[in-house]
Length: 222
Image 1 (cartoon, rainbow, N blue to C red):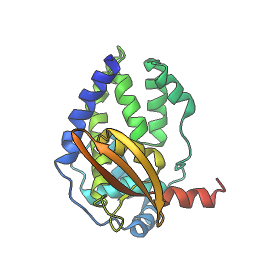
Image 2 (cartoon, one colour):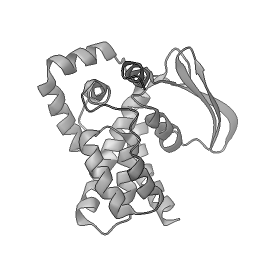
Image 3 (spheres, rainbow, N blue to C red):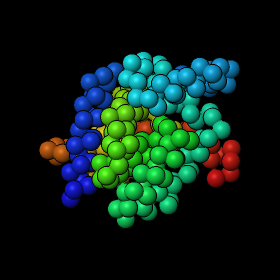
Image 4 (cartoon, helix red, strand yellow):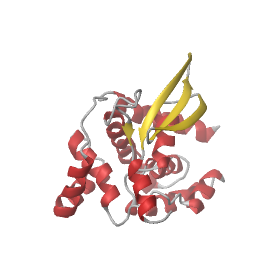
């Protein structure tokens, strides 16, 4: 119950930032890929600003940070951090914090890792962890924001674009706030998820483009 309450407070603070700027922007994956390859120094500078929680990053800069990660050597969307997840589910927040912060050094744009780090920080007596809460909230908000801005999400012509399956789950559960998941299907290469929302009896479908992960899996035989 305590974890759930703290988690709700953290998400409410971050989500208010997300929905304040939900405009759709054009995401040019090929241009981002070329930019990361030809100017890695600029990409690293943008990532450093993101890691510091710099909310002055523009939508285009956030798109470069988030989608550009898929074109770095650290990108592995099939890594679900099993030991970390087990510690998190067991309520071992000291271990969760330690493992999450280490993993975030290699994968700073992971919504799942960021959320687990936030929950852990709120549940341990650690001054450094507490100090990081506002930074992690900003990072959560910025990742969520650029995913929401990547498309309308409600039609297959304009899906939300993500770089891994875990981000779909976090957007649906923690950002959109789905109450009940009714099913999912692959439609024309997109992942369509049917759900209900709180205080709304209608059924909704959101579309996600997760082809960056699918391409990775094909290229690596996974």
